[in-house]
Structures are given as structure tokens and as C-alpha cells.
Amino acid sequence: MTIISISLSEKLLEEIDQLKEELGFSGRSEVIRTSTRMLIADNQEKKALKGDINSILILIHDQKAEDKVTEIKHDFEDIINTQIHSHLKDNKCLEIFIMKGDAQRTNTIRKLFQTSRKMDYVKLVSI
Image (cartoon, rainbow, N blue to C red; front, side, top):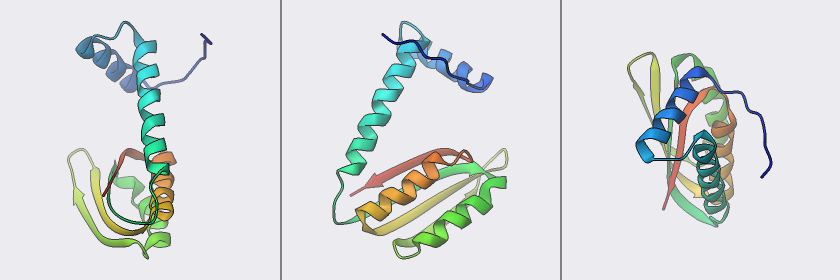
């Protein structure tokens, strides 16, 4: 098995350690391998979507990231039917986008938010 080095925040490392204990993983590496497999499977599932789809995109981000959300969403007004914005505790925001349109465009907006370092959580649910 290849050994790699990664940089993690203290908070993320604490959460990995908590998962390790709660779920009974043998070590941090196993948590990271499982997480990686899950991300790969999710990405493959999303890539397999075809045609027009209905979907919900859920975001949680710091309130300071509002400009990034606005920047991305404006390029996808053709598939966004409804946006719900709610303020959460600790200066966090919840965004819910209800979308209908081309699966590739839906995947593109998901990827843009997912790869943005300003998002805490991104989840696409498609029908």
C-alpha cells in the first residue's frame, strides 16, 4: 500500500478520531480510505445521471462565503427553480436549491460548490 502525506486542520483530525472510535475503525487511515471510497462512489453515481432531472442541492457555508454562492448560482439560473436561504448558528448559512434541468449542468454546479474551499457541506439529491 502506498503511503501519502496530507494536511488536516485540528478540527478535522478530531472529527476523524471521533469517527474512528464511534464506528470502530482500526485507525485514521481506514477512516480516510473509507471516506475516499464513499466520495468516489458518490461521484460515479452523479456522473451516471442523464437527461433532465429534478434535484435538490444543499449547502452549508460561512456567512462570509455568500459572495461565492452568488457568483456560482448566477451561472445556473436556467436550472435553479427555487432557492431557500436560512441563517444558522455560529454565522453559518444553509442554502437549498431546488433544480430541474440537464444532469450535466446539475453536476457542474455541484462540483463548483464541492471544490470551493468556502463550503462546509455540499449534498446533491437527485430524482
